[in-house]
Image 1 (cartoon, helix red, strand yellow):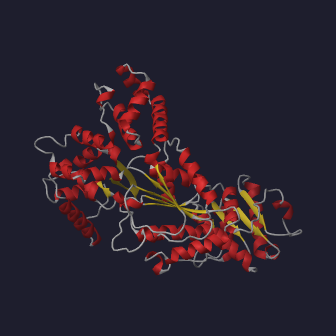
Image 2 (image 1 turned 60 degrees about the horizontal axis):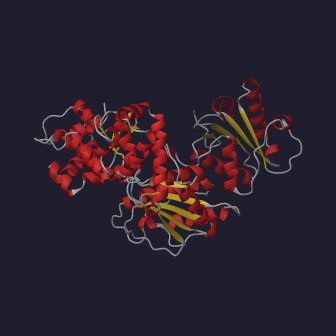
Image 3 (image 1 turned 90 degrees about the horizontal axis):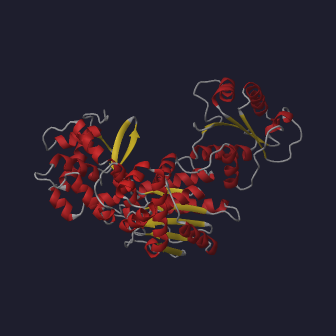
Length: 525
């Protein structure tokens, strides 16, 4: 479904109208809509009348008109309403959205606009943006890249209501503060945070070490832009110092908090603090503020590892590992649902002569309450990876699963399959998603010739551990979960694989540098 294109009709005679229109324009664009607004949308050199006619009659799907005592006396606004009326006469699906801001009386085409449900006027801008977004069916107020991450993380999500209840209780009991979800790799911290973003429309940022998205400047830029757009704050660009420390973010939090209504809250969700590259940064990780304005909360996730984080704001650490009974129940629910939905799983159970509920209990125990484990093992069973094995012979826990898959892929054979090993480690060491062509080129730097077909064969063998994404039409790959990268970095695994991580990192950097200097293009073909 294509995002809507909203024409915002307004007058510049009243600064309040103009300010509201500009802020709505930024907010709607941040939520994924296209916006047509004068003068910003006027092409250079094009006459105003021609551009406005095209904007209303051809380019937009929604017509939002800000109605005020000043706008209903504006020749431009009244003509735009007349254009919208003509368009609606030809296309009844064309959406008309009047936004009255006060007592107006009668005006030209008043009878026409009266036929449509008005967008309610709200003194609070955040509430106003929500009302307009709802009218245009823009529900999730997070950037497109974050929406994609959320959709991926919450796929087949189950349970965890005990976490949501604890967070809701924290919000009710504290005027502001930090709610921190802790847990082992793979237990679902990111999925829980993503589900919270979906439910509450939080400002959100995901740190992903395996994709090189894990620095303070990246986080600050992402969160600051989202807050500016969400609340319509009057910044057209980020100041240079915005990504150097936390001062500008703190300023934005104060400005945003001042706009919140009596029952509203601003929640900033930040995933995987343990994956952040601290570099030479001093003080709190990601420059997280030690104090917060009222109605402002941070929802954080991290592994159980010490991090530089000292605050005076209220905080609560929710340790998922202390809720094993609830986690076990949710794992069983997930396995039960997947078993009922996957025909090949049912066939495997029939061959095993195992009751479905017994399988749920046994696999739940083997998973050690780890969602990442079952998300890997269930597809493996469907693919026939465990044909002829009893359930009790499946690997115990996530680390053993990785080791078992490493062995099954022939990575411990004699002689060592060095090309295959090197390709996997190139993926593990890359600081950004890489294409098949770049992987082949790096492999060729030190080994016998490796073509892209050989690379693709390895990618297919390891596909469940990889994330694919399109970048300007090129498919690029990265490790899906940091826990697999951690397994590859285990000293015994590194030694057995006979690789030199530092050497691989240098080769990747050299090839990327060559690209920047105009070397062979990484087009992924």
